[in-house]
Length: 174
Image 1 (spheres, rainbow, N blue to C red):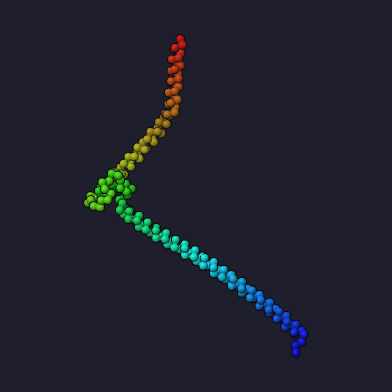
Image 2: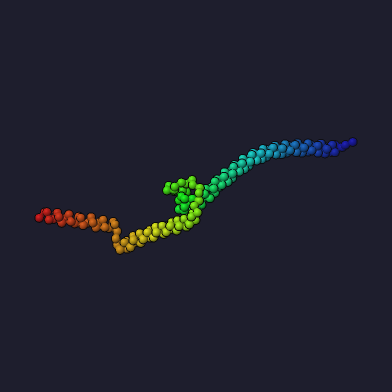
């Protein structure tokens, strides 16, 4: 029936087939192991993503609450710098110590007029302070150009006192 050459060929092919089958089984086991490891990594990453999402959503909620509160305060004190609001003065949107009551809720009908007057007064005061600053700067520059210096003046005064002491000492020695 089968010759020796055919029998040898069949044996070789059977050995090769068993070897390939064993190799395929090993590769399948490795693939299964790597797939499970990847699945575990995905679950860990999914948990981290869910945790980060929860933290971000919590931060967004806290930020929205803080923004809402800030807007309420801003609306309450929205008149700005040094304006009258409801019968009390505000500084940078907050009640000052001179305010009769920061909790008054009545609105004076003359509040818009007071706001304009106080705004103009504030601007006038700021302009005057700026002019005083500029005047002092100019005074310092003019006196320094004229040669006046506090240090030089002190040195000259000390030199005069020393010369006067020497003159007095010279008169006493005679």
